[in-house]
Length: 397
Image 1 (cartoon, rainbow, N blue to C red):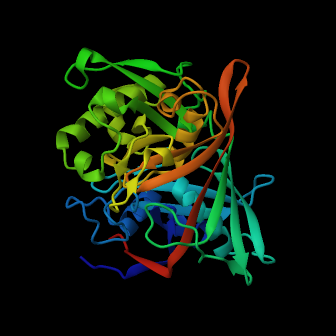
Image 2 (cartoon, rainbow, N blue to C red; image 1 turned 90 degrees about the vertical axis):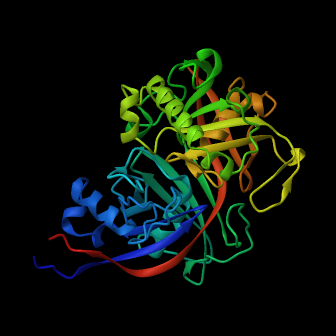
């Protein structure tokens, strides 16, 4: 059998928030990958190094975690008042699957910067450039406030983000009307069941008594919130406690599948394996003194609550950006499990503790026709290019 040369594709490797991904301009992709379908999925899998039965992604750009197994496509937007379209693919590490069902809030930060790097948005004069992004996975608008200097993105700075070792320039993100998502979020209201708290029927082997309280929300990304105490945790757990417990991971996945059915995202729990990116599952607890992964102690008075979230079947090392939007939205609505863990009452911002430190997110919640919605969620992240040039993938025989 003859083997052809590798395919060379212009690409940029970027960190956005606490995630990393390979960024492409749509126009630079091979013709077959410029449209959704198997050819695009195969290309992204090969770029990242999946599916990998060893779970290491050695033969690709992925880092063998949900935070680093990602690809992004940007293109000029035809939508009025938008600069670019941003499409995100979460590449499964060990299975033959690319999940297009949701957004990555962390890489949304890098999308704003990449729009300027790619020449889609002019850097202009020194200051802050507003980049209006159409998030194509979920059909929502994101506004990135990107600092610029000397006709280019200002990437260095002194903004520190827990979960990222080095400081960089601050990028402020606004997620407009993040609730009531389109196809990616299930197409329902912010609370798809109409309830701030639901009781899920679960097998006795998963939760004692067979009932589990949960807040099910579509905001930023579909998310299932449960109380840490109800599933035997404090909310201050670090990655190794959860990820080193195969039985716990299996239980979380079972609970995620049950919640996904209740949210109307899937028809049966058997479908959950084909929708790994959404919904997320997270557990919350009241603030307490605790130690984060760097060894630093976070005092209870520094935060409003504790949150731990799972992504692609593992506890995240910090917090997914889109899940942070869900946390802010749920905290802003009195009576949700997130709001109650934060002390209850009305609030326009919340600072929560995650395994790597803390994060603040603001959200403005309103009632519309008796239903809750969030007008806007705001948070600060950072992004920078790690490498720019070409990525190589073997040609198909």
